[in-house]
Length: 127
Image (cartoon, rainbow, N blue to C red; front, top):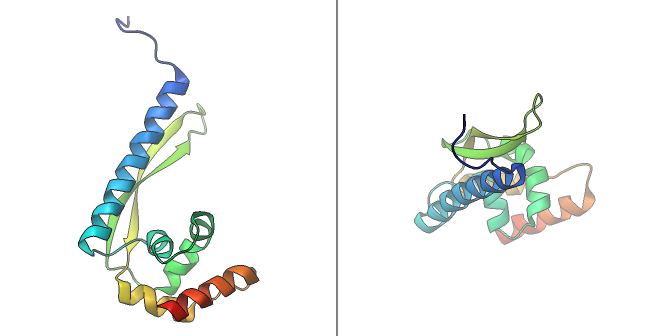
């Protein structure tokens, strides 16, 4: 028997989203402030790429960047297959130094998206 109020599903979802975003944002801010290695997505966003494009190309770009220096724990939100609820997963993510990111920018060009290939070329020239 529960003594508290029943938990609203929308409120639970909102709390989980805020928890994951806050954790990831604090971790990223700390890494940027201290000059620590960054994940591929964060490094691309820092260099001027929009979030949607960085989210799409970060996995392939991280392969081009070579082996990561270390790993950090990133929180991801997924829907449970059985219940449909949001579940917070702690996932390891590779981090890269600025030199590794610059070297990968020189080499990496997406083949299917010409606009993204142009954007990566422009970022490589700026690096």
